[in-house]
Length: 69
Image 1 (spheres, rainbow, N blue to C red):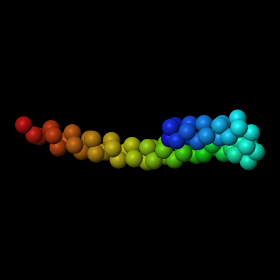
Image 2 (image 1 turned 120 degrees about the vertical axis):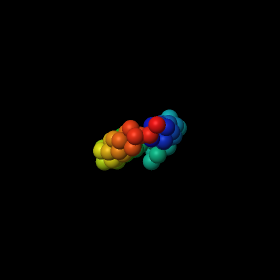
Image 3 (image 1 turned 90 degrees about the horizontal axis):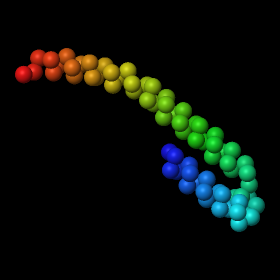
Image 4 (image 1 turned 90 degrees about the vertical axis):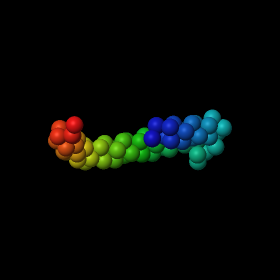
């Protein structure tokens, strides 16, 4: 996520240094920032959803391995 967003930011920064009006506009940085926040929230939401399942699987595995020699 960070690599992708930083690469896109550097590309738009290059366009702003070359004075290309549309791609060098400052509103692109706002879209990149909001996209990064959205992307991070989606990752956090998926992690939050899968964490209880991982804990349940770990406890079931511990119960199973308790009886193994």
